[in-house]
Image (tube, rainbow over all chains, first blue to last red; front, top):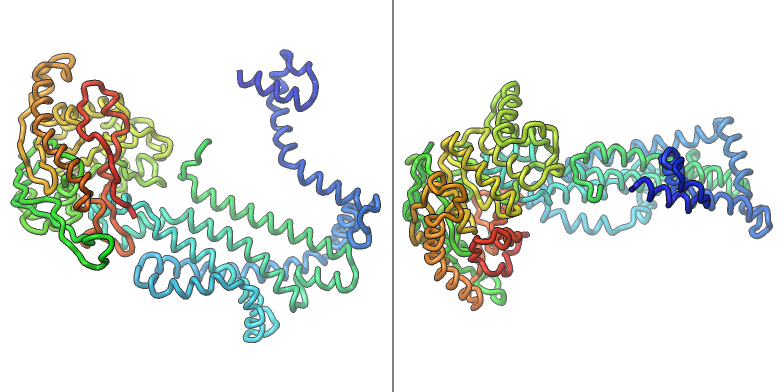
Length: 284
Length: 325
């Protein structure tokens, strides 16, 4: 029955009545896949078509928004030049170090704060204060103290990434099902073993959500930092291109950033899923 | 096989006297001078009105809290903390969701420091015992409620405690699953001959499972009466409708009736904190940073009472179960 229903749906999609006939069954599966792909890409396709058509039609000024095809040509050219790669490398080094540093700092700190109520009580007002201060507001301070070089950029990325990881780790540790703790206690588990065997694994999914959020933050903050003062990096590329009126280069830089952002998020999502497979997925 | 002895056990909790006057603490007595002996290898079922301290009693045997006065003795030795000589089965299963069925059973064995090589084989053996062969690699979210409880029972049995403590283990299950698991439990008990202390809200379940049924008073809880029940095998093909069974059920119902009425009256007046769960946790089992909440002892009987026709559900309403923080 489901097959027939699907075929009917598809018949509507394709606008062809014949598909309802017997042959539909053989078609159904590939058509369903095609349908899924269509639904997932149509919005982006529309955006790109609009980007291509509107400048050409003169609806928007093609000086400020060149058609997509021209931008992609430029991007390809810059990729072959090694321009894109050089700037991407500069940016990724900063993001990577800042992000890694944040994990190294925030993860153990979060575990400690989550585990010891006294630490939480003393530190939480401070955490509350810092987490509500936009990281970029502190960028001038970072530059002042760490200079215009790499350290201030890595520093600001680290700072921005610490909060989501820290707060999620704390909440992951604190919100473990009390019944699991009671049950483990009833088996006479000592505190360290309880932590290792119950608290830590139970907190993993929440911790990874924090890490994924941090990944997104890292890119955003870094680009902003590079806009302000840098001699390389994608943020610098965009800013430099814009001030030199190299509009196509500017858009090429923006596209690169988007793709890296999506790529990092997908990667972290995959990692998160890998570590949270035991979680019941409602409805699946 | 072990005896459990409650020797004039009293348990008080400190609670805030009332919501307006913060800071003033009042003691509220959950259990008062409980005397009860559970014989070695016996299956004793404890029934009592909501909030009478049944679960408190069980926590005391489990070593998860300590009596305010009196002693709980297991094999003559006072209980001072949790230990693997006693296994607890909770109503809400308490399975580790990131571990497979087999992994969950192994968890108790890890706690007992059984060598790795032995753990797997023993976990498998107990999974077979509860009839879940073939589900080794399933995660808890892939199992039904009844299967989860089987895994939880297997976990508790695997580390071979002398005493099995069961806190309304079947209350969250549907009527059919519940009856199947009751039979399963009797079979396992006959095979392993553990001393079982079983808490339930269902009189029928109490008569069916227990060799003796202890009835508690409304709070502060005491043992009101102990009823010997007829062995299931002597009751014929449909034990639940055998005259002996019905007579015992009625007897227990009568013993409970007044207590339930009184408990409800006290609840309505609302003069005192109602539930044990509403009280701050006593410090003994508290893990740093965590309130060890009582294991959901008051769960609305998920239609089980209503479904199994003859089941006398004496808990008419589930009102404002204490706050789980």
